[in-house]
Image (cartoon, rainbow over all chains, first blue to last red; front, side):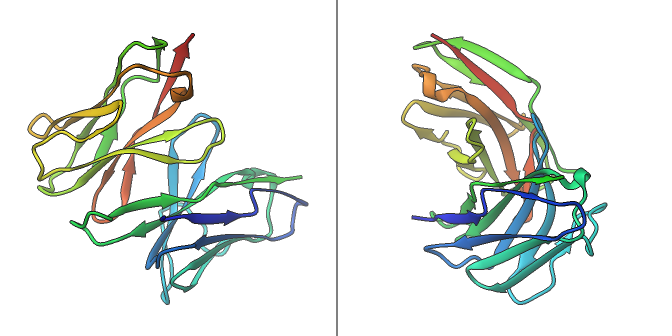
Length: 119
Length: 112
């Protein structure tokens, strides 16, 4: 149980184009999802937190207009990298929080990640 | 500020031996969760073990166990009978205000 499906697993796009990454919780409802960026040999860097039906909360330094996040349902959040440039090339990971604090089921489930290469 | 520190960038252990990965953290909260995640070369984040701060008993999951010292704000991971499949990056994380704060990670190498 508690699976998060992330697609695509890898994508190559031309500079200036937009790319959409999807993150779906398959067997639970995810009120809150998180988007991370991970550089090689580094830890996860939180980009934004998305709550179903409301605007995402972006971390300081993350461009809202470049990284568009939509969390339209309890099972789907999307990250769109707009007007992508080579410096946006990275590994992007989504995560969904499940359960309630204090509950046995409480925790975070991660997608398998998307490797984005902008050429 | 809430922080998580992993002071060991890399650790190596002989197969079948035991290794301990260190993690310290800082928080003003009294109730929180702590996690260890494993990230193998596939880069899929896998939950290894979870500890609730209000529980004094150390969490265990088969060959994985933690030494949780709340007063010292320490949360180390012990891996017993290390296997080749344990080779990965290991991240310590703290759940603060329903958001994860991450350590820098420790690369674990298993020597056959």
